[in-house]
Amino acid sequence: MTRPAPGLAVIEVAGRFDAPVALEVRRAIDTFAVGGVDTAVVDLTEATFVDSAGLAAVVHAHRVCESVGGTAVVCEPRSADARRVFELTMLDRVLRMVAVRSAGDAG
Image (tube, rainbow, N blue to C red; front, side):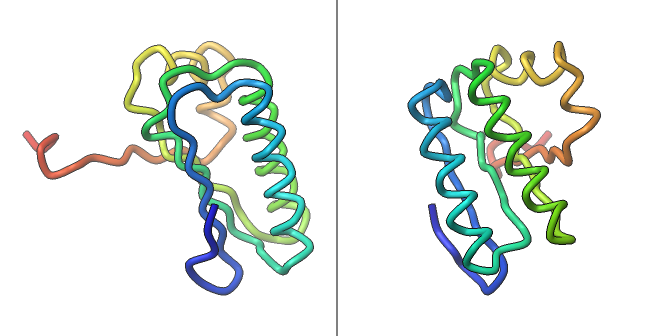
């Protein structure tokens, strides 16, 4: 979890995005919000599993950022299984989600 620029926080989640990790993400978002962050990037590119607690943490980031006039951006997981959770819950339509592609993905 980093703050690469004023007002911006980046939170990277790799592997399982379950209850213990979700709690850390929620705490980080709350800490960043108090510290003046209004834009959060939740990078799930390397997440392989997302459960309901992970989804709730992403929604929390979205709500906190919106409450201060900012935005939360979610980098889509590369894992089809992890991405499918957002599709099934239709959160991919509510949240600002972006696909991150590496140079090797072009084509």
